[in-house]
Image (tube, rainbow, N blue to C red; front, top):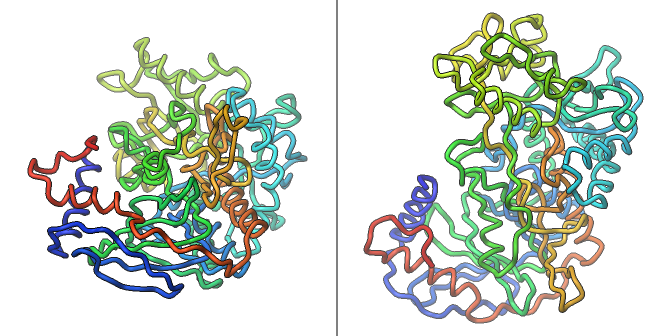
Length: 501
């Protein structure tokens, strides 16, 4: 609620700078050049690109530079500077069956992902993601991503929850490639560097408002420049949504305050249905009272959970995997312990994550960010004290439905089932290829970003050519978006504008 009010205030400030009281119909430029005009009293700037990517997190950057690399004139619209995107907060790592620690196989990774999804994942999409995982990680390494290394120079792979060898018969798998506990930070900077290398055009601090839909096809987006309040229409044959999840619809979560589900809302306003919105993941270890994420990598490196009696309670709920069971299993176990009166603290309302038994050099080299986060937000020294933790909203499995190629799909029995929305793609947490089903495995998120961001770029390359002709936009394209802003600007009942049509 507070986040929506803040967004509304921001939009109102942008509009107020223009001091434009009336709304008129719009007129698009028929030429391919950028055209600037004032229609009614709102200033409209028109752009034409081969492809537009909305969002500059891991998925958006991978799609954007993949398109630019293939010769497409590409614009990337982002409400944040790219390296401020929430991908930067990902800690644990990225899964791939490289086999650097023990023998591994992508089919085993696929089995674990299907099982972890509570058997509700799309197995075609899971097949594609896990098969492409090793290639994607090696590609990142070639781009310069500084993975942690084993003594013989190979990419270091840590244990992570829900991962096994030989279809669950071979014990705990070491499949998670990492850069200490700052993998997302490293990934984001690596992809941003590649996008600059391939001359992607950025529109930073532009807030995408709505999709421009004509005849059931996506023709681009309309966006608001948050610096000066101007409105921009981006005409593009291909539009990629990569705006992240909607974690901030919850009071407490590990998501940044910018994770407000913008792309999903844009699709909904365009009349497109969402998928699996009820599937919301609670990460077992958010810092008690603060909600900040403590990576699963802590347990992968040997940390364990304790209840108020000092018991390693996960042995009762998952005798084999124990603290490295999948996230839904661990979160439910923690909740049961608390509800049955075995929690920690005066109110018995949380549990403890114990790391003090680990060698200080391991904490310093593999979990430096966690040590700092625990000190700042929980006031504990992880070399001496446990971290108070509680399950916290972490990831949204649902979103804009897509196939494994990144193409947005809808379902209509009258049209024979699933059908593709021409010109529209989605990837990352915005999308729902249903690759995670009802529960995402740890370290499959960064994999999802790079695999399906790349898939969007590849699909567009297969179906379009740089410089393809585009029909002009309708004269009133984006009119409803501007009418909504105009209503917001002229509201007379304060800032309580959310939830109103």
